[in-house]
Image (cartoon, rainbow, N blue to C red):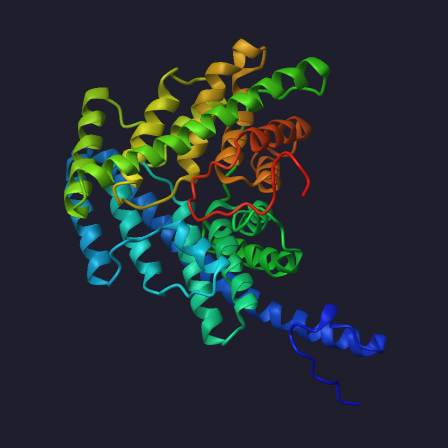
Length: 421
């Protein structure tokens, strides 16, 4: 017997016979499997190539220190590329969040633009990460694929989330956190209808990236702490401090952006000035620790070694870089800020510095992204699940106390952090 067709907004898609309901749902599942497989495969391969490109750019920058003085030239090239492509005001990750929230497409040319711009930023020493760019690349590719399938607005939103999850997972190697992050960051509420396709896309992307030689990101910590009232009390204080650092980072990004808009309105002047600022600061400091993502510094912090001023310097240099128009992402710089802060403050709270660095790394990330579940899962995938309850305690308090601050201006929280509505 032929299965009747129902409109997409049919309440719970209920039909009279269980067999028909199962068949109808299986068709939906099969369709989402196809979308997820296609998006995961494409975004996973692109994320792998992107990762190799950023690694090559980083190695070149570390070998040739003078490349940092080419930042202004790289900035001019970035602005020119966007303008020649008809994009005068690139919004970065915010553009993807807007596309998920509203009935808007993302130009497919965003993918190669962010790819090239991020490579130039890393090559010349801008303080930025990779995963934010991967979110944008994956989201724009998936949005384009969804429009080719002529999906409805609601399904296009889910497909875009799938691309974000696939890009993050393919590059960083944390499919569970990537899937939940793509769902959480778009509005602060989990729409469970997106869980299966986002997770499948993230898994496929990770498998493809692994086959191409991309290793998953993982960190080792000097030691973990067992659950106790004393440890819990120290972690609660650390979680509150993580919220303060998260707010400070968001405010720094905001005020540096306003400074640029007020005093350097021309995008070429702005990005040239930013390049000169970063190059000069790098030369004065005599270290390249604050250029690029800073993965080596994160590793040292997780072993308990961090300079007291490191988190503040990274905060300022990242704001100078990204708010001027250089590209990349905010996620790994956030890890840098959180881990170096935790390594310094941890011993004052009676915590092992390496363990405090790990806690603060995910706690600050949670505070600036408003994604508590993804942050907890990220700690599980990065650190192996030890002391998970303490990571959850730190992240949940940082989430509450960071208020409605966010690194993403387009992020809209659908619920109050202190009261049920």
